[in-house]
Every structure is written in C-alpha cells, then in structure tokens.
Amino acid sequence: MCGVFGIHGHDEAANIAYLGMHALQHRGQESAGLVAADEGKLRRHVAMGLVSDAFNRDVLAKLPGTTAIGHVRYSTAGSSELRNAQPFLFEYAGGSVSIAHNGNLVNAGELRAELEAQGSIFQTSSDTEVIVHLMAKAPQPDIVGKLVHALKRVRGAYSLILLTSDGKMIGVRDPNGFRPLVLGRLKDAYVLSSETCSFDLIEGDLLREVEPGEIVIVEKGGMTSQKLPEIAERTFCVFEHVYFARPDSLVNGKSVYRAREKMGMKLAQEAPVEADVVIPVPDSGVPAAVGYAKESGIPFELGLIRSHYVGRTFIEPQDSIRHFGVRLKLSPVRSVVDGKRVVVVDDSLVRGTTSRKIVKMLRNAGAKEVHLRISAPPTTHPCYYGIDTPTRSELVAASHTIDEINTYVTSDSLSYLSHEGMMQAVGSANEKTGQGYCSACFTGKYPVQLGTDQLVTLRRARV
Ligand code: 5GP
Ligand code: SF4
Ligand code: MG
Image (cartoon, rainbow, N blue to C red; front, side, top):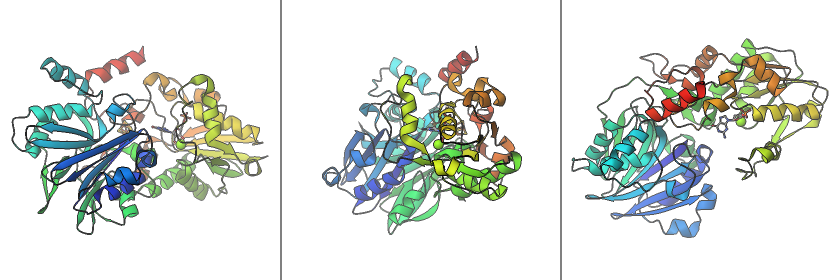
C-alpha cells in the first residue's frame, strides 16, 4: 500500500507536495520521496522512514520548480530498502520521467523475466520498474503513447502519477480502479492525490476522482483526458473503506467515516450482545465502535489508549518480543473496563495475534466479559492488489472457524460483520453496474486474473 501526490503549476510545488504527503502518511511509513521539475530538470530526494524524517527545510529548498510528485511507501512487492523508494526517476531517449505507484501488478514476475531475457537490467526489486522498462522499449515517440503501450502489458492495480522533463504531470488509474486517485485544484494549480484528506490540508478543492482506465494529462495549456484501450468492470478495493483510507476522506464521493460508522451499526444489528460499555480498538476501530454504540444504545467509552509516538517498532518482526509491540501501542483504561461487560470493536482481524493480546489486557484490567466484534467479514484470502496482507497460512480465518478463533483469542464471544452487511454499509461504487467492489480478501473471488507467482503461493497455502 502506498500514497501518491502530485501538483502542477505552483510556485511552491515541493512544499505543497510535502504537505500532501503528510496527509497520506497513514498509507505508508516505510519510505518517503519527492521529485520536482524545474525548467526541464528533475530533482529527486528519497529516504527511509516518515515524511517528517525524510524531509526538512534544506532538503525541500533543493527541490525547486513548479511541478512535484511525492510518494509514501508501504512495501508490498519488493523488499524494504532505499533502492525501492519512490518516485523512481529514469532517463530515456526523449528526456527524463519520474513515476510514483500505488497498487501492485500481478504479472510483474512474468514480465520481468521476459524483459531480463531480452537484456533489461533492473535496479530495484519493485514491480513498478516493469512499467519503466516497458515504456523505455515502446516504439511510440511521445510519453503518453509509451505509457499506454506499457500499460497494455500489465495486469493488476495501479494508480500512477508521472512527471516528465517536458513539463507534464500525468495521472492514471487501472481499468478496474482498485486504488483511489482524485483530482483537485489549488488556485491555478492542478493536484492529484490518493485521498481527498490531502486536499483539505492544503486548502485545495476536490474536482472529481480520476476514472478507472482514465489518463489525465496536465501541462501548461491545461488538462486533457483520455482512456486506456482496455475496459473492465470497476472493482474498487472495499478494504479502503474498512481500514485503509483516512476517515476524513471521501472515497467514490462517499465519506469513509460514515461508511465505517454504518458497518458498526450493521454489526450491532447482526451481532447484538448484552454489555455495559462499547470500546474501540484505536485508531482504526473508532468509527465502527461509534456506530455499534449508537445502534445498540450501549455507552461508548475509550477503554484503550493508543500511544501516537511509537511508530513502527523495530522489534515487531521478531516473535519472541513481539508482544511488547502491542503493549507499547495500546494500554487499557482500568476505570472504564473494571467490573464491566465490554464490547470491543475493531475493523478487521488478520492474524488474530493483536486481538488476543487486547483481550488479555482488558481482562487484566478487570473486564468481566470481553465480546469481540469485527466490523468486516473474516479475512480468508491474501490481497494481491496492493495491500500487504499476510500469506494464507498466517490468516487465521483461512483455516479456522469463528468458534476456533474465539477460543484462540480467548474472547467470551466473537462476531464478524457479514459480507452483505459490509456491502450495504459501503453502498454502490458504480451506479450503472451495481456494486463495483473487489472484496477478494473476504471471498477469494479475485477480479483480475492472478499471475503465476500468486497462484503458486495460493496453492502452496492450501496443502
Ligand atoms: P490481528 O488481531 O489480526 O493481529 O490485528 C488486527 C489489527 O490489524 C486491526 O486493528 C486492524 O486495524 C489492523 N490491520 C488490518 N489490516 C492491516 C494492514 O494491512 N496493516 C496493518 N499494519 N494493520 C492492519
Ligand atoms: Fe482490497 Fe481485499 Fe480486493 Fe485487496 S483483495 S483489493 S484488500 S478488497
Ligand atoms: Mg487497527
């Protein structure tokens, strides 16, 4: 998962992009990068870590120009290292181009093998670089032609922003529209972003979303738009509504906060329980817990406090000391839960390890009963379209019943929102063709044919 941002036609392009990236920080904390264009020269700065660590006044001052694109990365394809940090910047016969990608290509492995057999030398382990090589080899003379040529070969999820040395900013979304991308204005400048919350921060105006399969080209004379030749049904990622997008963003023109609140309300209807207090697992579980409390009439309180200063703890990957990670991030409020029957609402349950620790924590703080309510269906399948869900063997719901998970996390009861309930809460993403969502991680119905790499891991997980 990643966040992308771009601005064209502003005297302080790099500063504005820096702010825009801050608003997208929740979409990726691994690396941050920015490329600015100044009279045909593209300059790049990328670093590991958060936007606030990667940039300072001096760095931004070295990125002059009126156009800039930025990227925050959360590794999916490719390992966590600086050479995979985006935006990428490359030279081709006609000039230089920079590219920032949110999503994941499912056939990158096959294409990479083919390109390497033809002599391409890859500099990163990122799927995005495949697009770059395909563009470099394209026979078309112009950059948009090269891009269209390259995208004909790739399958999967991509919301891209490109910046060219001849002064263009290009935004493009895959024909399925898996990942969000919105278009806005800041005075005379055009802006592109993964989410509308970044427009709020820079005090820009939302124009509209970039359509699935649409290419928008911004240059000095204004903005033009064209379509990719391939047509597909919209399958917007429902998990953006469940977990990924920021609650103050509009996604498909709909409030993420209200969708999550509705998920909580539906959950209260589907899985009621007698209890004294409803508490969220902060931050992601908050809007759904508000909905659950409203609908059930059970008081809402903050029974878990999240430390906002932990960031991504380096100890997290090692199992032996992983449990400190959860305690560093969350601590129970004894005065809220002591002696109470507690409903804990979280947005999703993936491995179950966090939930298990939370239940234990609440019991230690005196909770009499702990009822876990998840405002999405069981996560049974990995995502191959840009969300870093673990392999099937690590997804607890892939191989266990809800009863077994309840026993594992040691809750008094456990319920998930039904698939139908989730879909009703998010509404339609496409008025013409119906729902218009991908929900493959809950159903296993992958809307875009997987590549050989993914099919191998899926098969391996089954045995
Ligand atoms: P679990 O109980 O499965 O260990 O953890 C569930 C928590 O993981 C939930 O609070 C949910 O918000 C969070 N979560 C769900 N998907 C993701 C993801 O893709 N990345 C991260 N970092 N957390 C996630
Ligand atoms: Fe989103 Fe799940 Fe589909 Fe991935 S599989 S795109 S997380 S709905
Ligand atoms: Mg969470």
